[in-house]
Image (cartoon, rainbow, N blue to C red; front, top):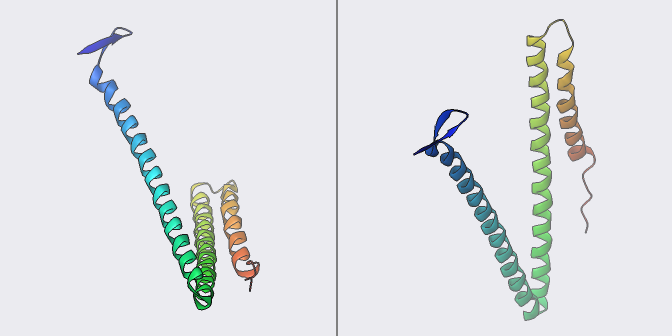
Length: 138
């Protein structure tokens, strides 16, 4: 089956495949995003319920629950700083690579200076992680 557009015959399957494919892709992405959010919500709920029960059990249980909470916060902050470190290194490497590439492509114009933008962003991230990290709260 085909239809005519500007004097040309176009098969229906040629139009339907990209349409159905994009609908399927975005439907999958929506369901995957929803299920991930639901999983995180359940995980947070069970964690909070467990901590409540430990805290209510006795004085020692409350102390251990608070220690567990503080340890989780420290681990989260550490992972965040490690992610910023990695992002800074990758961005700086992209800047250096871009400078080398553009210098090799264009010798007469200083187009390679465009690579300074990601390089300086990466260096700013690294300076933040190593020189200005947030202080740990006691």
